[in-house]
Image: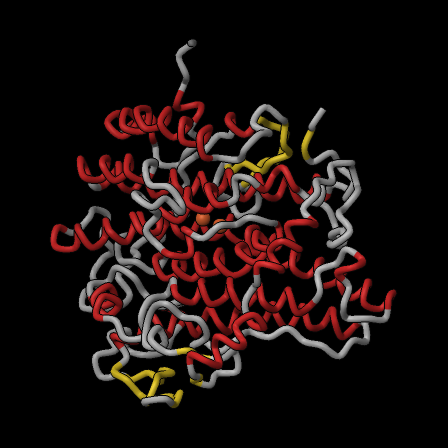
Length: 472
Ligand SMILES: [Fe+2]
Ligand SMILES: [Fe+2]
């Protein structure tokens, strides 16, 4: 095989050319990444040309370039947002000190764990989504799936860059381990629960990109505040790409809602399964599932780790620098939702250990905005139903609600009531079989599966019937 010019292959703004040690580490890692990609990346389609966006710089006006390429030839690059001259640590005990350009020795282990945990989610989602190509509802959607997949691959690169560049030998070992864990594997699972769930159909995919990628947005936003400057800059640029993933989720569900409403009106019934649409009740159950799984990703309401990450200056709040307080929070309190015996109550707690809950609150408010937009679609069709976020205590596996059963409307209920009603609230076997039955590939240009409306516009100014993936 001809020698690969890695400097050419790895677009970057980290001066890779000058850093031979790092370049060598990445050169060693890259073939292993490609092996992982061919084993666990999108099934099929690897030899097809896909109309993809590639990050080529961090210039806000022109950071990406669009063009056809085969996924294994994607140029997974390393980009950090431009440094802010004189950036300081903006919160915690080190507040006011210059941001760290190297890993502070005393926080090394903690920082590495934060980076590995974030990094692990990136390949995990690619693994979860690897079977979806075969059942795409259109070429447009197929292209969006692959765009999300290659960018999650790039996010893995971003975290591996940090590990290789700043954590020496341990970092390189962690970089290897990121390629060895497997979503859903019994012996070597991915680190976080939601990333071991299956994404077996496109409804799940849109729910995942809406709810679970949005968790990613909030985690990245909190890490973008980090006093460790390379992590901050890396995450800031990742957020640029992440926006598209959530767009895919929000518009994907919006287009399903749209199609559902059209079928409801046309046939004057809520029960549109017989006409090949996904009824609103099923959408609500999928929403309940993905939302509750994603809420768990924020961790316990009361967490010493969260307090420590903040106090050490490693992980800030969402939009930390826009907040108008002392950014130390030693004497502050925060109102959290909690259990008082069988009752759901809110109470003031010392602020530092509640930082997970605060980030979850920001996330919930963001999730609610999309739900409101989907409800607008329903309203425009003159229909009375609504989708809703279930209560934050619903179906939780982590935190204070993990030991009780909570209904979507926020009541602590008995095990008996849960058993009697859980099929109203969560996807049933029947739902899954039904949704799966709709998953027939549509690959004709400009055509869409019957259960989803076409998008309002194409990608990068291209028409909707553009040949987003060249299958011929
Ligand atoms: Fe990502
Ligand atoms: Fe993402």
